[in-house]
Length: 574
Image 1 (cartoon, rainbow, N blue to C red):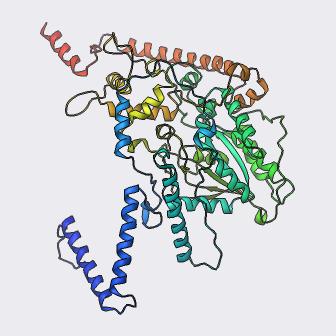
Image 2: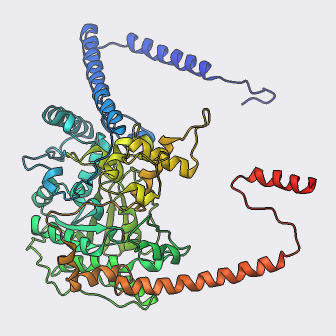
Image 3: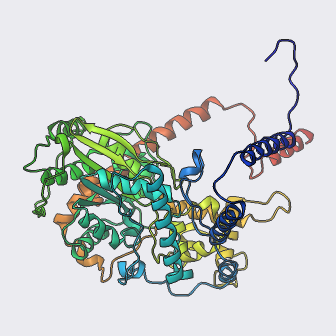
């Protein structure tokens, strides 16, 4: 920039005019250059492309790879129709049923047997150029979208429409020896697509299902879901995991974690330890898979043992024999390195599992879906490589309200959250959990709108202009509490009986081990003792503060901070 020249304000309107002049200049250069394609043919191609783009926008589809920067990996879903929005608004004002709906949900209800396949990579060879390969994948993905929308239409749930995100999954499946499917155990049938097992078998890969967040549901239900998966999907491995065992939680929150009523609480301590118990479960399965190969897992085992010894923890090994299918090692474990691929839906806890496997915080964690943008490669040890794939929403018949609740669809982008509130209220007694009551005592029945209004009044959520209860903010808060596990919502397998599973003490001990406890009862007693000691310490400090403040003027406690000033003025006047 020349010296002595002052900066001139440059508006957005001027920038737009400048870009238009630049585009006009480029078009003039193209018109001067000779072209082998006639002008009529070019205009026809442009018009056809415009029709394709228009149809894509109408359907809510944006092809991946066409944009650059951050938008290249953004989450993309189909848009709701006006009819669906009207139906959601109508149900928001209808009374809830007097009897709670059943939580029994088989996998067939989410993924029908006639098949809802996810897009797989089309055939390719090394002789193809990058341009030809990209065009081939885009053409296949467009035809796949047209076929699945025409077949299932409005009954289809939200699923990923960004081709670039599916490309990440294809690369991870191709380069991995073992795939870890991370599942939120609360919504197990909605997160395990059967078509994924077929693709894994065709590619001769081993699959490990990791049931994550086992601290958010009763221990017998964890074992029930594991038995259900092993029964319906033979030949795979299932292990358990939680990134929030009792020793990583604040004492008061650890106590309320095992309470049966009211809002659940789960806050991490300031300095947390590596959840080595869950990492050891994954290690044991990988150790059986690589048996007989050149892969050496000693350094990985030493890292886990060191983390367990720091807490003086006892190791746990299951007495069950894991039958490892006979897989050929040809073309696998290249250079003696085990490559593990992490796949799963958004908010399943893949990043937390990676941090536990690595023994440090190497990947950022967020509750926002789509936080991981592209697959990352990390090394657990010299012989174990980890590939993290972005969260993918597979096509299914999962209710859209449930997808919002379990975090597959961003809560911040939900326009009408009351349908999801209704789904929760039909299975959980929200008025009792939230401890809310009707303003009109004669009213017995609840609607989703009334629940949100009562919670807004309790939390003092008000709109800025009209000073009315902010029911939209209230609904978003309820959805986020359910996502975090504060509101206890989960699905159960068909035929689940808690009394039967409570007798299975041997299997339950594995869950207690992951939680850092020998049993739930012993954990509650220990945590209650620690919590009471903390309370007594706090009471002593508060009493000391009160004794020091004697003789000083103190303001009275009021619900409104400005009322204290008015009361103090009245006292002075008296």
